[in-house]
Length: 389
Ligand code: GMT
Image 1 (tube, rainbow, N blue to C red):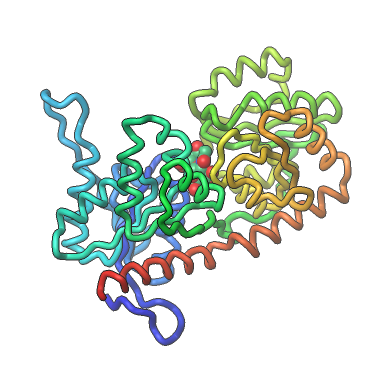
Image 2: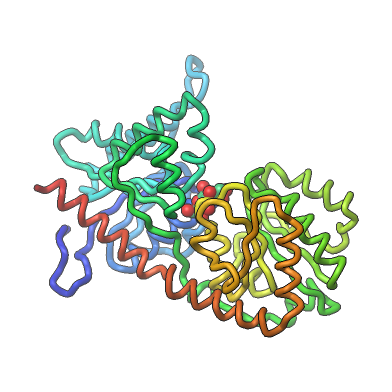
């Protein structure tokens, strides 16, 4: 495949390997949606993964899935999953003549890519690493992981991060000054858009209640107790229901707290939901009170669906949610203020409509899938070009 910019302004097709966590979560969603968008733009995409990514959906003739198989031997305490992945990256790079390998998360993927690059030897394999957050903001606190993550970041040919906030944290945590490009998360406005599902809404809010929504993997950093406490304050003032979608370690405690706050009859624990676009169409406000959040893809999907966000000022959220325009932000843990902000949106029909329109407009103008995919294409071109000179 040709590897330079065509005269028409659109890059010529390249062969791209993508590695990511295939499980439910923002980084897997971004990597998968990126792969699909690249395939639609004529590139050849090879997912090198342990499982089929969860959002892949329909068949694309130019998307290939390569699954790493890990042997398990009695002498090994754990299956050598990372080495199997590195070996597969090297094999696919050679067999399919990959132009670039794009990995999502430094740990383990950038490190596996570094090994793969070494294995393929003189055949060059440029590596692009996208940082999504947890490896920098959580895992790097583990001394054993710190140096490995740093190595993965330093050895990548290009590094991107999903917000300016994450770039600053990466520089400060690892004391590095290498170039890191900010490429925000993105959304397809044809998939996430305002919808009026009157009949569905009547099912969850039969008496015309307001609908609050939170979707996450129920990790501690999401502060699910804050979601419940904000909701408890709101429903004391205006009739409301809360939809909670997702599953994760805090799920059981969340149910206990909902019982002790006496709001269990108004909280719908929906569990894992793969088709979230419909859920946004039911909501009046999306809650995201996270303690750490490098960007907040789910909040962007809410905004694209015309749902204002009330959340915390953690990490990259302020780069996404424009305070007072597309929602409101308060300090982490300030449930009182978040409840006031939510009530202000729910009580004022005009404000709600303004914020809904502004949310959709901001998602389209700043975080549209086409502009972000073009940014990644430019990064691929630059590392491919550099490898050839
Ligand atoms: O939010 C999560 O816990 C999932 C996590 C992941 O690794 O999939 O999401 C991270 O990457 C997303 C895509 O770039 C970001 O939108 C999320 O903000 C980020 N999560 C955190 O920083 C906690």
